[in-house]
Image: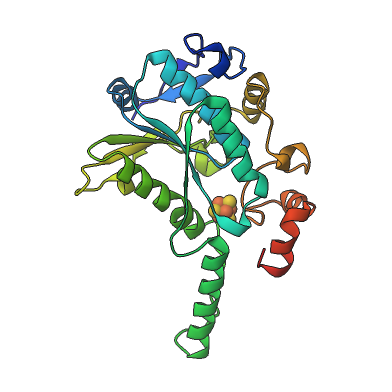
Length: 277
Ligand code: SF4
């Protein structure tokens, strides 16, 4: 899919003043589109905007909703947050709620039915230990996810989000927007603007859809500047604790600095010390 871009104008002028978020025009930042995404938006396809409470997903929400208004999209759109449970910063859900208030978009919260991320890691640890004791394997297997084994993201985020979007929008082709950026990693630098999301394909429900990465070309500075222009207060992980990103409080990919930042937040210390939260 070839990448095209469009200017990110903010079309709030037609909203009642009381409902308008307080944001300034942010011309010059680009929303990444493909012809397929543009066509779907023109057909008023439902849009799910993944939001974690982190800076990128907050900027994504403001930018996508502005773009939808600018092009006259009248289809459904929701902010969708995958709640990972005890391993989340407490301010993550609060930030998602503030984002919903600021943008006027509905917030949908999804969770893994079989328990939160800590439950998943603990049950994997117990299962792996039992297999070792029973001589079903000769090496102890890590309980944690790893960068090459991201079951935390797929089972706790991607699957519940796709399930919810498919159930909400039967018979539709859905756009699932995520705030990944090329600058974040070599892997993300290779991510396409849009790609088929097979998890959205449900024969019985008649759904299908695409993952869409609208702020793929934005720099970290773009994100912080844009949120400042939107006058949106950042998650406390940045404001108070000096973290560079909002993730699980002990993300398996967190830097030493970010892990130290999470440990300085009193609300996170239970989960760091006892795993029970
Ligand atoms: S934030 Fe880190 S630990 Fe949490 S789901 Fe994402 S990759 Fe996994």
